[in-house]
Figure 1 (cartoon, rainbow, N blue to C red):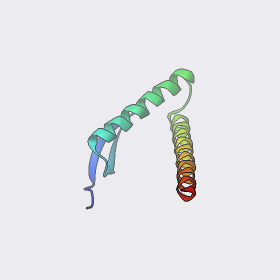
Figure 2: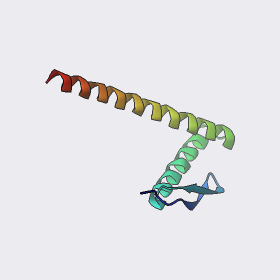
Figure 3: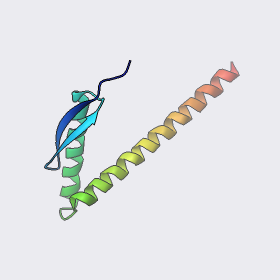
Figure 4: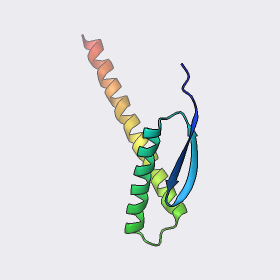
Length: 87
């Protein structure tokens, strides 16, 4: 079953965006909230940072977290495969 694509309006760092996707509105609201929290934290730590630089840092952190989770999942899968072959 294919999920229906819909539009979600979000305000991130004071700018309005229309996001098109298949995620629920609840998920989109949660992502918007996290992005705004991260942006606020970056502005507090570096008040002169541009929105563009803040966005790049947030994207870098998101990809870094994604790669760490993928590596952890790969490690867990390898451990699971090893334990199954020992049985």
